[in-house]
Amino acid sequence: MDGNDLPPIIVKKVSGHGGHHGGAWKVAYADFVTAMMALFIVLWILGSSEQVKQSVSGYFKDPIGFEKGGYKSPLPGQGAGLMPGQKSEEEIAHEVEKNAMDSVSAKIKNEITDDKIYKEILNKLVFEQTQEGLRIEMIEESDNIFFELGSAQLSKMAKNILRIIAAQLVKLPNKIQVEGHTDSKQFRSEKMTNYSNWELSTERALAARRELVIDGIPDSQFGGVVGFADKKLREPADPFSHKNRRISIIVKYSEKK
Image 1: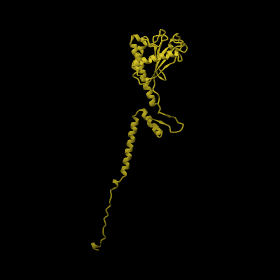
Image 2: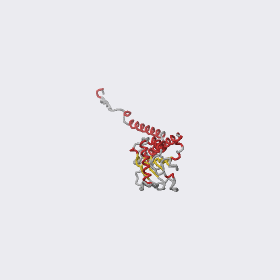
Image 3: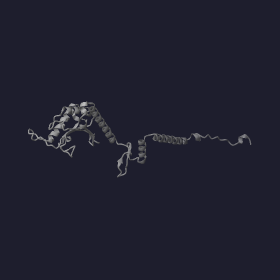
Image 4: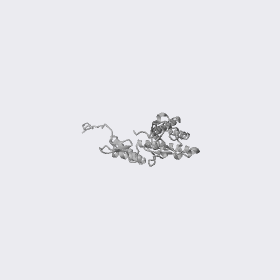
């Protein structure tokens, strides 16, 4: 058999790339990146504050009802609320206001204490934090240091104390209410037959407001001026006590939204 009788050899070329150039490596790489991201998130959480940890925990417990920094149950009958130990924006704002009022009280007391003339009457000024806000009371003495008996005319001492108070209250944006109070001794006057403790307490409150305006507090900051006569006694057990005769200045907390 000569060479011409040999069968032909056919060489087939396979097109495409080898197996190591396939797409399987992309899946493996994606898994690796995901695992690294999860690792970094875990490390970040471990190094974060307790509030962040609680917030993340709240999200995974209830992702549907989760809201800014806290969570609320989506189930009927379950109360909405914040994470344990977390304060709402309203609570934080209230604390800021309270601290500002405490600071103002301290400054008023310090200025009065530094003055030898006024230092002796510091115990006639009462600073109280109430549900309404900061209440400053100028409590009358038996010798009528703020008002003459049966009069709405402010004494020089009262004007100076109000000036010190106004210098601090003007720094606050809060509304102010001024109240007038009397004891239960009924007002008697031959000239003013229809004049009573209601008129007296109201006129004293108005006199105090006018003085505060003169001392720099804008009229727009006042939310009310009220005379209560003897209906809100400071010493209910002794309705005729001079301590019931007083002016109250209330710095109101902001209204809740």
